[in-house]
Every structure is written in C-alpha cells, then in structure tokens.
Amino acid sequence: MKTCSLISILVLSVTLVLFVSCNLSKKDLQLANQDTEHETKKFATYETETYLIVYGEIQHLELKDKQGNIVASENMQQLISTKELQKGETYKLHITAKDGTKAEQSFTKTF
Image (tube, rainbow, N blue to C red):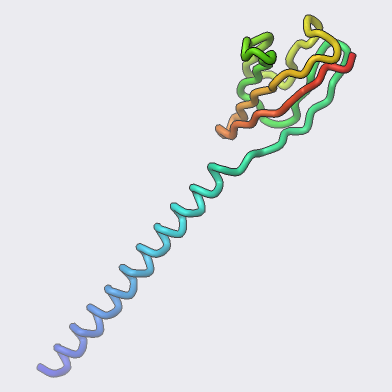
C-alpha cells in the first residue's frame, strides 16, 4: 500500500512539474512572438533610372507620395516602376514579404 501511494505521489509530482514547464514554455513563446511582431525589417534596395529594385521574397510593393496617394504598386515582383515619379521627391515604400513581414521605408528618387 505504501509503495502504491509513493508511486502515485511521484507520478503526480512529475505531472505537475511537466505541466508547469509546458505553461512557462507557452508563455515564453507568446512573449517571443510579440517581440518579433514589433521588429521592423529593413529591405535592401537599388535604384535605376526607371525602377526601384527591392531584394527579398516580395509579395507586394507600394509607393506612396507625401499625401499618402498610391503612385505605383506591384504584386509578386521585386521591381517597381519609378519612371513617372519626380526627381528629388521622397516617397514611402510599403513592402510585404512572402512570409508576411511588413516594412515601410523612405525612398528619394535620384534619377
């Protein structure tokens, strides 16, 4: 009888330790995910006379002027046309990567 009680107590103790460990792990993962959501990724870009090239696995690109109007957009492309944009003007480049990462970067047309 005493052996059976000791085994039951041991099993309950191990179960409790595992339960607490699993809950801490879930909480740690949730905190890690929250931190990742607030990180901003910087995408490398290269400008030619007529295009802006964005390096990475790109799902969507969008250029907006100072008033927030969309002046160019592309889906599933690393290139976005800049030939109609004004030289010297600054635009906001909105990037969505294939993995869901989003970024906003400034872009000043130099050509």
